[in-house]
Length: 165
Image 1: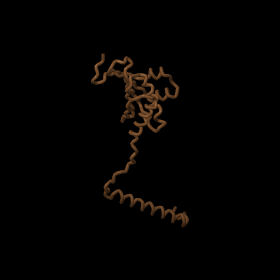
Image 2 (image 1 turned 120 degrees about the vertical axis):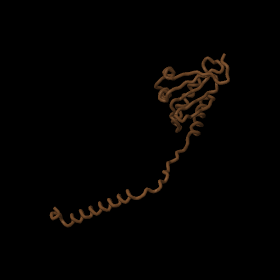
Image 3 (image 1 turned 60 degrees about the vertical axis):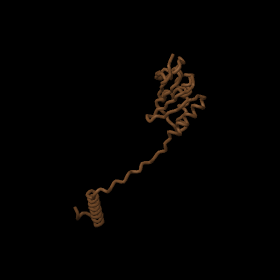
Image 4 (image 1 turned 135 degrees about the horizontal axis):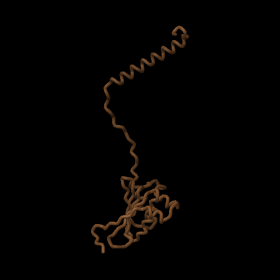
């Protein structure tokens, strides 16, 4: 078979064989060489948007003329604690949360709103929790208020230090 090859084909085969031998020797040397100290891998440090997004959410709440505080949780949720006496302010908090993705924050899921209980019993609070997908559909007009209300979870609690009547 070697005799049937032209001189040029023989040189190419010899060159490829030498290249393979060099690669094998290099790989073997690398495999047998002692491991060098591992240098720490530099991971990109993404900017922490928590403070900026909390400020954005508080401003969105204020734009709806509702007073309260905002907490962004490590699990991706957002909590609004409203200070007014009107439980209907929860709707404004849901509307504010729907505006956040357009400002580079969120979406947050779930969205929890802590408001005065509709009974207006002193110290009694209502927590209304909705999923992002439902709030988004509501904000886009794909579902109405009643449907969003039906899809929320509700729980009540008594504020520490208050005595309900």
